[in-house]
Length: 422
Image (cartoon, rainbow, N blue to C red; front, side):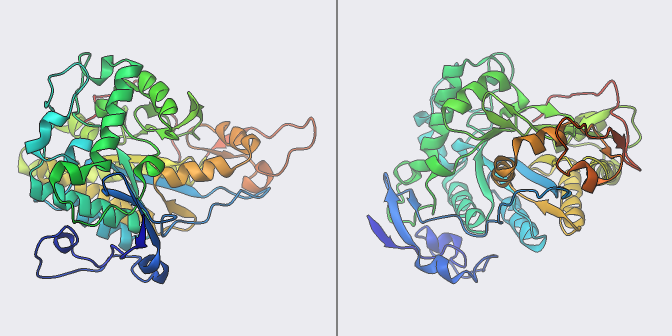
């Protein structure tokens, strides 16, 4: 079934979902005249629809011989949902103002109203249970609208799966088949939100989720081995559920391993995972530390992320991966730190703030031999004679010169603390 797609951008959240509204706002990308007249093919119960290629996508080009790679930065959000804090909509605005795309890992249960929780069958746990709970209908409504607008603006809707069960009885102990069940349910909650909410007359999400869903991040960064095996079978192109050093990524189990990374932890002798939860765990161990500490926590995270950025930017140019939650832990210190980082780095020369899917597109377009050469550069290391010579086509039987540590870079620190991620 085909219709003409009404561009989601500029349509009020409530009005687009069949409720009353008093005002509208226009998002980035609303100047795309083609979006207003794209054909729409409804899928399933009409919760989603194919409307053509995603708008506002950057061109994908192959590195030329001697060309320095761009500095990619991925900002990603675990369990993305829109509640009273309105952080989803806020960071959409930050992305537009910073010329950035982001990845929003939506938890499937965040589009399943609390009243319909028994539709969820978590592996190894009672039906209808969830360690992160469920949203009420108004929050589900708002989350769906943010997903719509984010996709129209060029960002990615990934998955944080569903019930956020951690530990050996949770995702850490799940089998490949259990992960497949969890992935399939996460897809279904997005693909059948009209059935589950009863909003049958509402506009669909403007994408085919089966086609668009390219990857996710596991709760607590646990269970990645079996998850990646399941994800490959389920059509994923990447996973971001582990912890790596700041080096160029490679594939595992047939998909890109785009995990979080260890970055400098200012004032400490070890590095820390590039996520708000891990900074918090190593600072206060609490989301409600004394208010007089909040500014210091904010500064420490901001400087740590920026140090990781500079280390890559002036060194091996490995993509920087940052994870965060829509939470106001310690007075919002981590949200402010990430926002300041976005606004600082995304306008720098040769920097591309992209989604994971966009990064995977670029990686897939490169010559494998070029990526292999990039992976030879260690953390904080740049080519000894510069990028032009290093990235030039090597003569037959020749060897590339050894890299050097970049000015201002730092060596990989031993004894990194890997606190459990949220």
